[in-house]
Image (cartoon, rainbow, N blue to C red):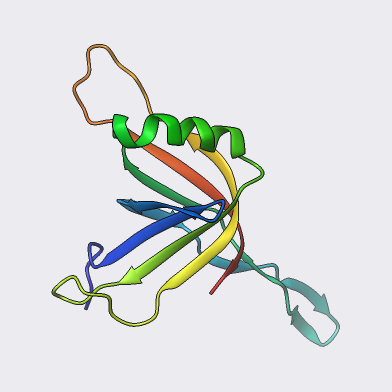
Length: 133
């Protein structure tokens, strides 16, 4: 049995690795089925599978992220992107085949600022998926 921390999530944008991210949400596969009631009963027609957007989050690091985020903001809606999730064994070593989502960088959220706050700042990237492997 694996826990949530037994996965390593890495991101590539415009063919360049931008490193590991703390959290990944989304990327679930759905489908567009159609149901029709006929004189013979209910008939369900096959539908196309679709992959929902993937959101990745990590802590904001000034030295690493200031220029990176400026570049990513300019590439939103254009840049090819992939998110890889590698399962890890109990010792943190890669185990099995990774899952890879591909698509385009949809949005960049650079996080919130608050003069009175001391909480760590995170940022998120959202990718619109075209496939999952």
